[in-house]
Length: 336
Image 1 (spheres, rainbow, N blue to C red):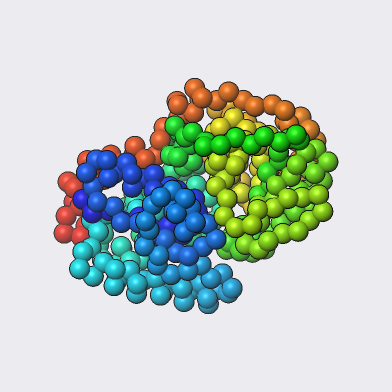
Image 2: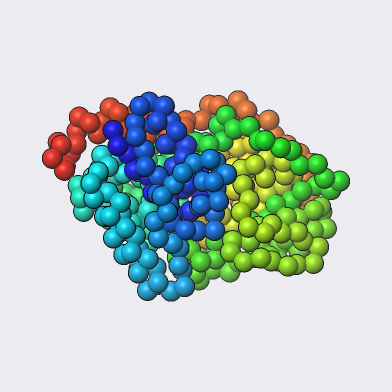
């Protein structure tokens, strides 16, 4: 089958590459597209993967977002005019969903951010399969009327952390604390306050703080920063503590046994709580409690290899749907 995956962020690229490699091993043809974004193209290059660049991320205004989405649809039409995909897969790319739905191409979505209402409204109603962690309450996603929800006993990041082997180790005199800035330009964060810079300053008393800005370079006293792209999965493998207001980097760390502090403020992240219940070192707490919790966690690392192996990999679910359901159920532009 000819399969298409579209990526909007760095996480989506890593997810898409993992899916593509598995499907290619099974004899399928996979086309990967991605928009220009601070992490997308750099991560694809690091992974040695070729992606077709379609459009860019321009969050300057609501109108700029709309224009870029419309431009991407036109570019998709040109790209696939002579060879349409049989299946479209994404971690909630609105552009992929609109294009595939309009042309009767079955859509497989993954999702793990319950509070991303705008993205949910633009993608889930157009999907044929919505694949989500069993840690998420079904009611949150059901309200957007997906045709079919498929649950799995894991989280998205299991797809690329299960079996992952970091290529290098970090060797520092002081504990390494990685602080990830909030995704300030995401639609769900426009009215939220980013506390990560202030916390990074405070955490500098406990070790070497590496602050990961989302878009622009950052200069803060006592804090190091990375210019350009950084592979977060590899970076956190050698960290002593990870602090963030999002979820991906925290889960990448916790799945490797590195303690992670997920700051409340954006909305409830059920998959973080799911991993915590499973015994992974991910802790959800308000910003006011981060410093004290950091003191308790630094110097510890959890052995989670067996727990990680026991989690279900969402790529297995995707492959099963692609090979055993879509060829037999989807005919003439609709499911039978």
